Amino acid sequence: MSIKKILVVDDSATERHVIGEILNKRGFEVSFAEDGEKGVKQARLSKPDLIIMDVVMPNMNGFQATRAITSDPETRHIPVIICTTKDQETDKIWGVRQGAKDYVVKPINEAELLSKIAALG
Image (cartoon, rainbow, N blue to C red; front, side):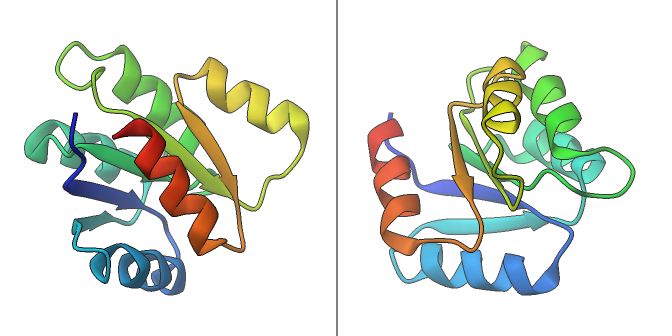
């Protein structure tokens, strides 16, 4: 699968901007959602090739949104990379149990994020 369209789900406008800049300059088509609930809806509507998901968000957190996306027949094929400040090993294990394919800790390391995307593509 070739990754072209990426949905970034993060409640921080700054983080959305930073991640968007990294991805845009690499030629990805980037869309955004401000919380987990909107991320789940956006995933169903736009069917991105990849979702980058924050964890700590209002309404529906990233773990809940990841679980919703990866258990829905319409969106389960879309890989999710969790991208969060939560850096405990238990958080990483829980993220993978919710269906995430990978886990990146903020602040974003551009090379690490891009290599994880490439590994999924």
